[in-house]
Every structure is written in C-alpha cells, then in structure tokens.
Image (cartoon, rainbow, N blue to C red; front, side, top):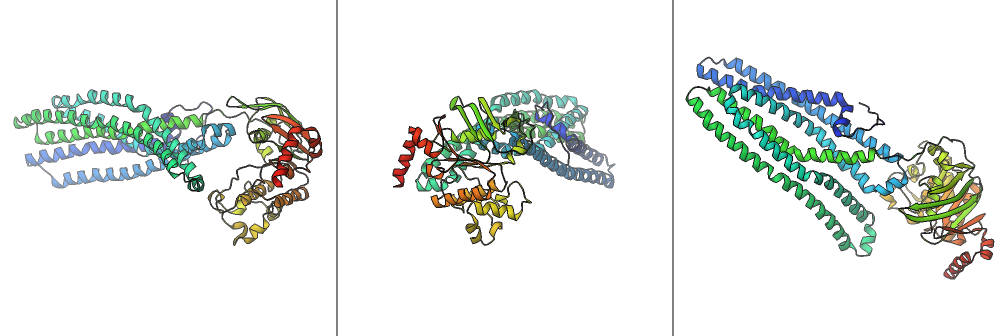
Length: 576
C-alpha cells in the first residue's frame, strides 16, 4: 500500500493530492492512453478493409487477424485498467478517511462541537465517496476524452482537412458553452454537499429521539423538518440538472449541423472519386470518436464539479488548525487540583468568572448548583477538553496544558451526564482503552458500580453484546456501566457529572461507599443536584450563574451560605 505523509505545507487541490499516488494514477493514465490510442486504429483498419474490397485486393485472413488482435489487446488493457482504477480509488478514499479521522481525533472538543457531528459524518462518507467516484471513473474518462479528441482531430485533418473544418468549429462553440454553464452552477455543488449535512442532522435527531417523538405525537413536526431540508436538497439538485439540461440539446444541434455539412460535401467527393469510400467511412467513424468525448465530458461534468467541491470541504477539515497540546509531563499524578482566577467564555457568552478552589489528593469533593451554572464546564476545563480565557488550572501544581495529554487521560476517569454506550460487548464497553485488561480489574469496577447482579443475569455475562446506543439497558444501568468503564482505568482522578441522576438513593449510597472502600487513593469530584448524595464529602463547592458562591463542608455551608440553605430546604421539602 502506498503511504502518504501529510506535509506541513498542505496540498491545495485534488490534483496536488493525487501526486501522492503517482505510481497507481500514472499506471491508470498510461493504460487509458494505450486503450484509446488503439481504439483510434479501429476505423483505419476498417477503412483499409473497405478499400481493399473495392479494389479486389482484400486479404480476408490478414484483415481479420489484425482486427481481432487489436480488439483483444484493447479488451485486456481495459480489464487491467478497470481493476487498477478501482484499487486506486479505494486506496485514495482510505487515505482521505485516515487523514480525516486522524485530524478529528487530534482536534479540540470545542472544534468538534462547533463543526458538528453531521458535517463530519458527511465528510467521512458522502464527500469521500464523491472523490472516490471521480478517481474510479473521472480520471479514466477524462484522459480517454483528451486522447480521443486530440487523436481524432489529427486523423480527421490527415484524411481530409476541408471536411474536418466544420467539425473542428464545434470545439470553440461547445467550449464556451461548457464554461458558461459551469460558471453558473459551480457554487451549487458545494451547496449540495452542505445540504447533506442538514439531512444527516435531521435524520439523526429523528432516529435518536424516535421514542420521544412517538410519545409526544410529534411525528408531523419531525416530518415537516425533514420535508423542508429534503425540498432544499431537491431544489439544489434541480438547479444543477437544469444547468446541464441545455448542454445536450446544444451538442446535438452543433454536431448534427456538422454532420449534415460533412455528408453533403463528403458525399459529393466520393461521387467525384476524389475521396475513397473507405476514407469517407473512416472519416465518419472518427467524427463519432471526436464527438463521443465531448458528450462524455458533459455527463462527467457533474461528477467532476462535485468531486472538486467536496475535496475543498475535506481540506477544510484536514487543514484545520489543531490545538496546541505539546505538553511533556508524563509522570504519575497525585490528584491535587487547583483553579486560580479561571474565567471562561463560549460563543461570546460568560460561562465562568473568577473561579478559585483547591482540591486535595484522595479527597471527595461535591460541586452543586442549579442548571446552567457552569458545573460541567469546570470538568471540561480540568480535563483540558476546553481552554479557559484566563487564569490557571493546575494538577499537582503544574498547568494542565503542560501534561502529555495521553498520559494524563490514562489517569483520569470521567462519567458524563449522557451515558455513551458502544454497540459491542459488555466487556469491551468496560475495557475500552485496554483489550488486555485483567478479569480482576474488570470485576472490581463492576462490583464497585453495583453492576454485578445485572451482569449475572445475562446469558453470556461479560460477552453479552449491547444494542446500539445501549437501548437494551435502563438509564441507571447505562450510568453504572460508564462508571465501571471509568474505574477500570484505575484513575487517580474520578470526575462524576451527575452520574446518579437515574439511580435510586440506596444504590447511590452503596456506590459511594464502594468507591471509598475499593478505590481509596482516588480524588473524587462529583457534580450533583442532590445535597444528600454529597453531604458527607470532604468539601462542597456551590456554583451559581458561573460564580463560586461558597465552599466548605455540609455543616459549614448550612451555617454560612443562605443559597445553600435554600437549596437544602427545598430538597428536604421535596423528599417529605
């Protein structure tokens, strides 16, 4: 397999990118040229046979063998060319997908959220397929068209230059027409791919939220959303088709007019015996060879335009600026965390302002506050998924950005609000980063997450396959599974983002007790809405509207923080 390295100075065009596959693309081009040069010989052979029949000097065996020999070679070369062009297209598509996924995996959390999963999915599928289709068909046909066009022009002029003039006059007429049409519809090729992004997003939302759509009887609303985007896609596609619709009638008018002139003038030359019947027959054959690549380019124009437009979209992702993550610290961490004067803005909106707190190693800290207080963003800052606008985030006294990211993440476990479950076995969901993880490590994590009873009920145990998005699991089971996954890393820092929201209070207490017993060396930071879950923690941080309101133990906060008292009292009344 040919390997390509992504250079620091990126290629700007699809043609430049193809230079990385010189051997394969060169072989396909050479074969395409060879096939079409040989194809140009067929009318000459037929002309020779016709003229020899008229003169009575025809050698049937010689003519037949020559014809069969050339067509056999053409067939063999065409088969090899087809195979090589398919292999080349697949290799180039694989390389594009590799570059895309490598870039996406190195990109920041913010970048992926901003661009959107729908667009990135379109890049990896429809956009790459458009380029692949061009490689598989467009390159071969394009070079075939050039060879046939140039070859037929030379032969037409050599046969009878006077007859060739009306045919050659079609070139500037059709060239100007092609240029005008492309200038009008070029922008629609990019829009056509962009509308696929929208379709993917609407379809994905409808499928993921299918249960909610049915419960709320919102099918008509979702259908309307799809219809709007679908009609937009139809409109763009129609504009492209309309743009090309006038091209083929124009080709027919120009070509048929030329045919009529050649037929009248050439026919009179045959009658006058200034042109042989064989040459006249060959001349008409070469006219068809001359016209065919023009028609072929008309058919290919859409694919070519789409390929170049989609490659620009791919390059936007491949050439996008990566976050600066050149940290070199790769030591084992203790779990000491400190935020100093941290301020965060996202999309020109203040999220956190002047946040200061210190979390000691092996301690348990709860973060509480109302919805949209900025609690989850604190977790993203600690992990380096997003970067603060000002201030410092320190782990063991060192800025988080100074750490080697892979080494740091191998020592941090995070359980998100949304349980991310993969369509694979239970074992692989837990041992996500290490396929050689020991049974002891896995079962320790399972027991701590209070998941053992559930695993014991499964026919295949840990080898039971989980359905897509974990649809076969309850909300509580999914959250406990993601906790087991985080614990299986044996992390030094464990970040829990409201992970017990779907777990009853008794199970929640057991889980926290298990954590203290089985993982006493871990620094635990838990975001929660329920004070009862964290009232025995070493420290509690109250955050409201992006500001740190108070910190301290449960008893201390009840005495000194009015806001904390209000939250506690409201929850007490709810429980009663």
